[in-house]
Image 1 (cartoon, each protein chain N blue to C red):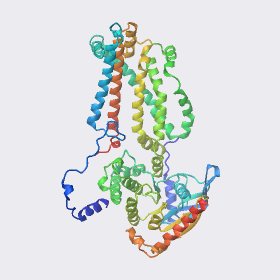
Image 2 (spheres, chains in turn red, orange):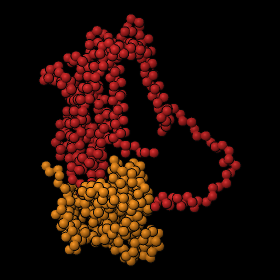
Image 3 (cartoon, rainbow over the protein chains, first blue to last red):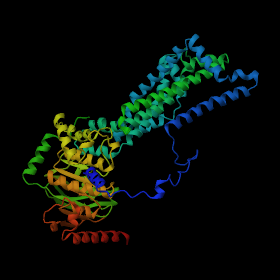
Image 4 (cartoon, helix red, strand yellow):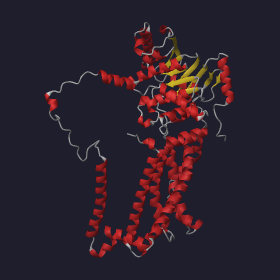
Length: 296
Length: 282
């Protein structure tokens, strides 16, 4: 109806005004040029790529400058960018680094998805049922304050220098935060969604699974993206203790021989892997939740 | 814990049907009191009320007068402190599909396209998918959204989202339509379009409607009967039949504005509202 009205309104419009002399010339004013630091400024896709690249290049540039500012005798403690990158290359080529990287990636993903397997259902249930929340939240809230690193001795006693001990540490490092974040995501679902489902005669299982969970899912994936970053930060702690493989173990071995280039190579590897993980989560969000992004 | 328990069990629906056949009112409130904050706020104070079938009843009054509370009690989303509300003679013990509700906040699910949203309620009721699609198309057409069937809510304007919500509620085929300030978040022009659309729908679908609104003109335009509430304690100040309309509904709002008796009715309601507001200030 509205559209028809608009169309008929367009037809009924009077003839456009005769162009005046001023109209025929170029624009009367120029839009003020946007400053670099503009409040409510804009950035287009091209600009954001260029600015992002400048930031990355600047970071490595500063690193390089500090390398050359260091006295020559001390330079091996701050190797240059090309030395570190070269070292990563030779690690892959000669030292079977790919197996270590693979092992670390495996540990991160297995422990993280185990944590999600517990945290997502628990967070959704706690967010849906207030009594369950009252039962569990004080405990889980408290557990968040236990530093994951302090579990290392305990896990060593329980499981020895096994792979499982490392997975357990990575799991403990993120699971409690994950529960808290997912609980917040679920609590942020508008209560009218649940109430309107109730007035449609929905059962509790329908409301929890098909309304609350569906409504919170995009934010839950975002919480997972943020928490897997924390998991990566725990990786080296997990692999410090009695590990024979993994990026952290390679770095700890290098530390014994003051091979700073390998240590920095490890840090850089973790950084790159972290960024790739982040990008893959963002892509997953685009694929899983297309309705979040308006088609234009 | 029985997670499969459903509110719309067969026996209850049957009892409601029987109550309807034997002439029970769609909604009967019996000495309903609703208190909040341990009795410090009395939203509804000993209200008794019958809603008549196939009528549009508007509940109006100043902010905080308990009109929304009464609607939520009717929907089964809250329970009275004392007294009871009944639907066709059956006590209301929770929400049910025979009482469809449209909320002020946008409730169309963002992860479903417009047509899937409309189908959602029917899916809950176990209607087969071919019939669901057919009925969803019918109701989308009724709210003039047939061109936007596959659009997601993020791509729709506020008015369109609200039309999806209305179509979804109608598609569950409720015996009662509960509208809780459904146009409260829309601008004046869209509200006006929506009001005329509601008139069109009521004419076609003949539903019993309870409308909560703070807009006097909207109440007079849409309602056959207006119930005016006082604020804290919430009591019925006036129960007015819109007799001046002569049982007519006006597809165009301006036709009502020109109708004899309209101005007097609107003036009367404004005066009541002033009494209530001034009572609060002094």
